[in-house]
Length: 126
Image 1: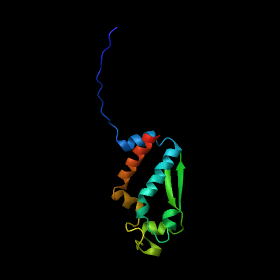
Image 2 (image 1 turned 30 degrees about the vertical axis):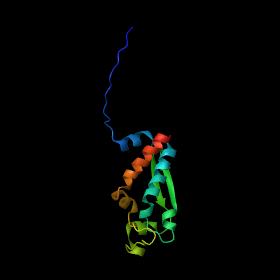
Image 3 (image 1 turned 120 degrees about the vertical axis):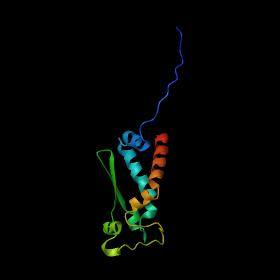
Image 4 (image 1 turned 180 degrees about the vertical axis):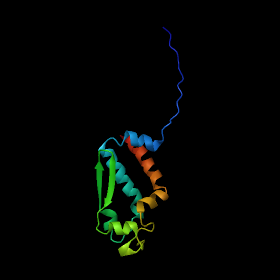
């Protein structure tokens, strides 16, 4: 019997984010890790006076693959959307990048790409 070498070529047709979504978002600990990592990446965009708003969060995972990060201070929604109490004034003494809709601001600054990098490291380490 003779053996033959075969060259196999393939092209990755799935985007890395989709691959991560398909593979690691199937278990709750991976999804929680993604949420914790995302919070760390956008933390500098959260207005910061004494730190309560930025630090007090609750991460909820639904259906094993959907995570949400809630800032639990009662005034969080006012600060997030820039209405009522603060009238769009963000304290930047400790967080110069602070803004309303801090997750969107972090994404616009490229922090979502850092999330992808962190998730690749996480996958390699698993």
